[in-house]
Length: 322
Ligand SMILES: [Zn+2]
Image 1 (cartoon, rainbow, N blue to C red):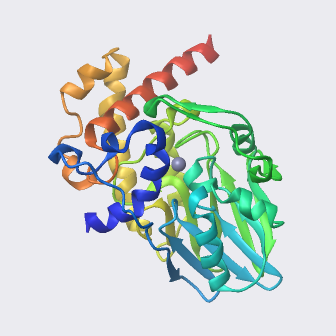
Image 2: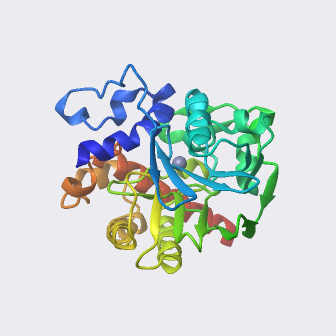
């Protein structure tokens, strides 16, 4: 089961590991076996969710493909090196032009194909912070990694500050931004008729999430975002997480509960001004690690990132309140 989940996370590893070194993030790190990347790229799998909506996995973050009369709409575009494979898989769903590409957030395992689809004429829709982040070099402290600005053709062409409805192929897609959570660029997309919700990286199904505190993310925001997603999804909604297998509302609820538990343990330590090493030393997630710590985020690394994010968030809140 976890092996399968790991397969879905390799796309993130490929992006996050480019500079930072893969072994530090690998699921087998504790066993001393670096998770060597496959020499041949992971095949892209296409899963039919409805007649017109398909899920593409294996090219980075999970991609939704909505094929309507007049053109195809996509949510996220995968890793840059997989753009040609993604384009082929999308054309395999329905051979027509991609007219709209929505980005759930700025990370390269979700926006790497933007340049290709942008050059082919797709409009790229995203939160305004996604365009801002992609336009300039970003630094991710957790991986000590600089991300160069995206090429011009990869930048979103239609941006919005909070929410937007897109009428498309008989659907009224609801795009909504949440307060900083995984990043400060996050958008979820709900297809009411298809009853499908794409959460981007607000939801890592089955394992500890990465929280990009260098671009605004923090664990409290992840809990609040999960509540927004739970309020949007119904019992039968098919939920596409940013990484991991297709999910149900029940899966999302369990994930939200894990996040809230960790937040409840780390926040008092932040209030007590514990250092991150002191926090790691008490293994605050020890009872959760067997269930959640076997994805790409090792338990210790998750705690470090989650805790640092809380500390930074508190410091920023104090500053803005002063
Ligand atoms: Zn991400």
